[in-house]
Length: 384
Image (cartoon, rainbow, N blue to C red; front, side):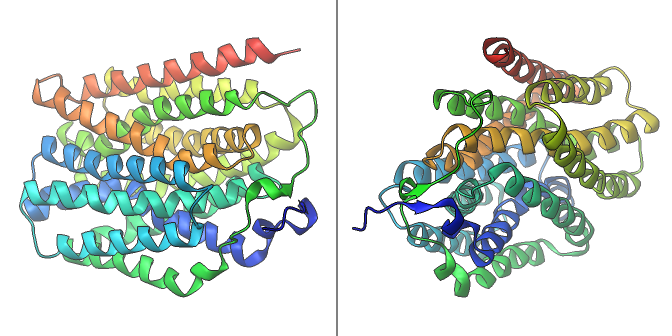
């Protein structure tokens, strides 16, 4: 094995092909996540699942994402990234194909776990590729900008498809990737000499794993909110079709979140803007537990979509900068998947026990408060 270091200027992960492939793969890997409101509605309307069941099916999908990403985080230093990607593609295609044949709740639950597992392998490699770029924060900002476009388009497309059409759509997105997997660099990331962070922002590697824990907690909020917001709107007496359109169009505010994050990254530090954003997120989700009118719904969804992307840029970039080995970055989809497993699963129990959607949004606010506290302690620990 060649042990000579590769400089940042020749970092293969910065190449146009690998970068664009990683970008596309993240959009494919997160496709279920971003379309959860529409997919949950399809499971209810087309397959007859209850609100409790759709939360558990969504949790199974995201639990699989977590398990696949955890496995990738462990294996990525020893197993070819290309091999891990092929494994993820095979599992995701198989599970989605079987979903077109089996529509009962119990089988769907197991198959969505398998689909999530494949997505976890696939997405973790993609996110680790972006994290391996010489400027990971900028890479993740571009990812989330593309993510906003993808999210908007999916939320327009998914409601037009049959249940089988949705599964076939997911299959096709993975199939398209197969000819390009060879572009994924196979070089050991530790052989690349990346530019050091300025001494005033450099933090111990352990901080990356604290950041992973914060991502899990913040995604409990995101998962529970995103899986239930459309169902909650209908339960509050709002027109379901109108609510779906509000959610779809509000996704466009994610663009402003990306551009806002890009501007702040150049002008300010990393901690205080993130803390302010979490405070606003607490308000955005918590208000729905107090009042669920059309005006509050629109304001909450708009704020949520802007703030979610802004927070993600900071969280994902911070983890990748603190740990350049790639293990923590590969774990990011797992952290997101775990949080989004816990969120809808906890919400399903809350609904089952009669706490209602108001209780779900209280849980969302509490998760955002805990994440805010973690970043607040990091800020106090490392401030000048």
